[in-house]
Amino acid sequence: MIALSGIKKSFGKNEVLSGIDLKVNRGEVVAILGPSGSGKTTLLRCINYLEKPDSGVISIGDFKLNCRQHGKKDVHALRQKSAMVFQQYNLFRHKTALENVMEGLVVVRKVSKAEARERSIALLEKVGLGAKLNAYPSELSGGQQQRVGIARALALNPEVILFDEPTSALDPELVGEVLSVIRQIAEEGITMIIVTHEMGFAQEVANHVVFMDGGVIVEEGEPKQLFRYPKEERTQQFLKRIT
Ligand code: ADP
Image 1 (cartoon, protein in one colour):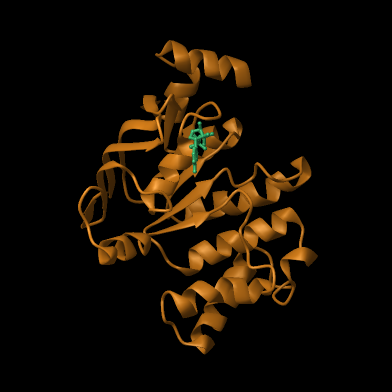
Image 2: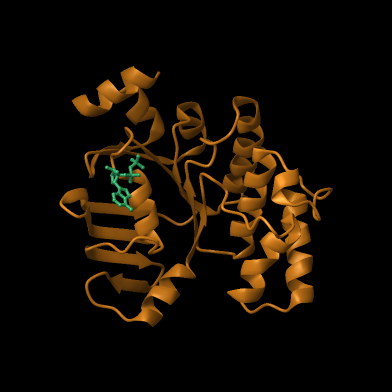
């Protein structure tokens, strides 16, 4: 359902992505692993054009965008296909949990306020925040804020949800509640790409694991295979270091 082909991105002279090819099937959960600085976040940001790739082709469903030649409308169309869950939650500080979830529906999807409100309440209930609809981000724990972030992404009903290290800013005791919400969504068959350092979680929830290093995909495969029998030396060393 998603196909990335030849994605390249440099910041100045620093080539961060050196030609990434990746396919993701509908309903699949893909975990992207790799050392810090290997280009994981940049890749995720390229998929919804928070970063513009220098070259390559991004296909989502039957929509295709060539990064070298496209109009503004194509970027808008591409962005509608995915929703991002950020490391630092990126909620509007002056809006309540409910207003944060409604915002994208009303502003981007042009849904009526009444309908947006109803859908947002249902989603906040789903992530366990039915009692916090009117709380501001400053009144919520990190785990609760991230669950608002997840409800906000779900509200857009995207083809794919992109998670950028969704638990790495959290205190250890709050990681579990966020992972369990992500696990629950995964079971519903929503396509997801997750950059994560949570190896246990990746092993348990992902259908497919991608190991990146130095701006390339070094190795990819089924979690069992990749974690137990990594083929490439760089993968072996990385897994040894972190487990
Ligand atoms: P990872 O997610 O694997 O840790 P990133 O994609 O965040 O890696 O970063 C890869 C490299 O790109 C790093 O060297 C980082 O400093 C650089 N980089 C990322 N974003 C920018 C940016 N906006 N401007 C300049 N360099 C960047």
